[in-house]
Length: 487
Ligand code: GLN
Image 1 (cartoon, helix red, strand yellow):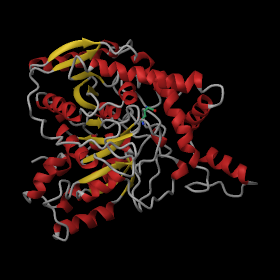
Image 2 (image 1 turned 120 degrees about the vertical axis):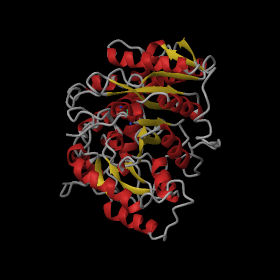
Image 3 (image 1 turned 120 degrees about the horizontal axis):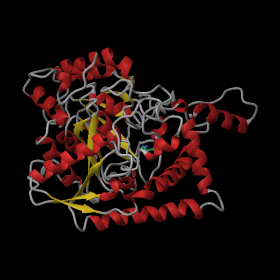
Image 4 (image 1 turned 90 degrees about the horizontal axis):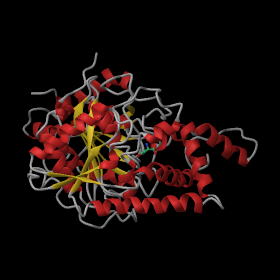
């Protein structure tokens, strides 16, 4: 049998129920591995060793029932942007260095109700702003496949932890690609659900009209399982959908023969790495072999996605981040001369450079006289992008495309040029602006051994079809089985 740390969530459950391992053994396997590897990876900001072991013992002694909860005894990690009662939640920022939420996010509460063991909180770009995890106030995360490279972002800690087997699975958040892109860079599965599928209650807000919580896992079945647990209506989030979620695992093994898959011609952008292009061609051939019909489609407004997103997201962020004033939360500059200086200095010392850049961009584009030229126009472009997808889905069941035009880049490579960093999001932003579900599933490796991800996008509420396609692909390839090796 594989080492306990290598098991997926569903395999862990199987091993626990068959009594091949105790919960304490599973938790200990992860804790030892974190101890051994995470000094260099830096994927965790907080490890809850004592709490996790205590819970494990409660399962093993029978105080907690293992049987009836779908995640009973499974150790999971959470991106540090999700509020956890009594556990520090930093959002990767100095300003929340000592913030201990008095409540759990709905997604966290649902994991707990379903038996999960919380192993720790993972590193991230500050307030989820970034594509490389280099914007964390707590140091960059390293990519387990190449320690000189970024794991992607902003859920870089969650993706690296899953890839390095430092947890059985994790939650991340995706505002413009922050689940799919790091999943692609780290060779794991990451899914962004339809906007509104998962409650945002207790998710620290970045851009409220875009933020979604989703799973980062070792395989597609686990993604379906985790999403099933956290998805569904929550009266505490008015944007959370009332539509029933349905059984997300039911269609996983259904064949995809006869389905029509769209390949957007605009997604094969200039500057795409030839090895990514090759991995795509090979992935498309797999779908053809499985009996799908592949058609070229057009998403004509793709090019405007980056510009629209980098107006809308900072605008919302500038408003959401106004609450960090040194009074109610976190860091406060002591001994300030007067109230205004206290606000100013708390924010100046508490926020990092990228967050300040976004606040300035957002404040500017919302200000009187500029609103029409920027925010309103960007919102109109957003509608066009959404219509592109709705029209495309008239002619296909789902869309397949690359997640990112390149594999993971080197640490430091893009930090001097924010625009280059923003441009790397070109293939994930449109689905976020449109609110549709998407997944990244491993589809190959470059000659240098870096993972490449395939993106499957579905229509609104189309989680089941996205998961079905990704699962069928995964079952017929072995890209997801490869593991990074550590020196
Ligand atoms: N990279 C994008 C940004 O920096 C998306 C981040 C995210 O999805 N949270 O805003």
